[in-house]
Amino acid sequence: MKKRVHHNGVLIGEFDFTGDDLRDVEIVDKLLAERGLNQVATLERSMFNQANSFASASADIFEKHLLKEPPNGAAMSPFVVNIAFAIELFIKTLSIQHDKKLHGHEIKKLFKKLPGAAKDEIDHHLRRLCTSSQWADEIRTMEGLREVLDEIDTAFVDWRYLHEDTTRRLKITFRPTIFLSEVLHAACAENLVKRMTSKNQ
Image 1 (cartoon, rainbow, N blue to C red):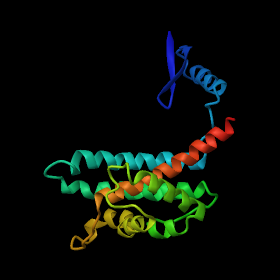
Image 2: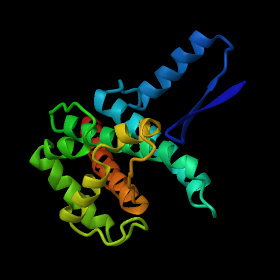
Image 3: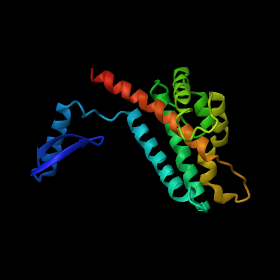
Image 4: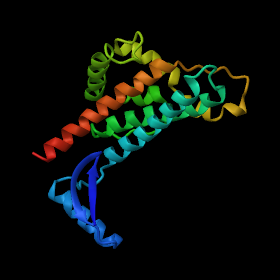
């Protein structure tokens, strides 16, 4: 019996299914190796994948619970926690891509510590996406992006512990926060593609 092998959603070949899990894994590994696709997961790739997972979870929550009328207020905290952590991980991934490891959860501090080249990449993608993204609103410059950073700075911690102080007023602006995530994602993804293609040349 033939089994198809897909890599990132693309069909790359077929193999004869043996029914022996270990043998089948060896066959698939060999098939991937023959096509140069069996790269060992790097730290930056693992971080990027995890950031994408949290961003995807926040998008699901947003679409299912916060876009509908009336919005489900109980979904606010899970949305914010997931997107804030995704943004944190995108920033840390971008920094790793420039050989600098960052620690902590405060978005503004992390962003400030990014290498200059990483900030240039963010600026490039900000200018590219600000005219085409449905989430950009009025954000056109790095200064505009910094206003979003101010708002989401400690959101990962604040919104996780919202129950400890129900009188506290927290604010999150959906569209600019999603746009920030989108810009950071684009910068990280472009670096990953560059590295993968340069290794395969």
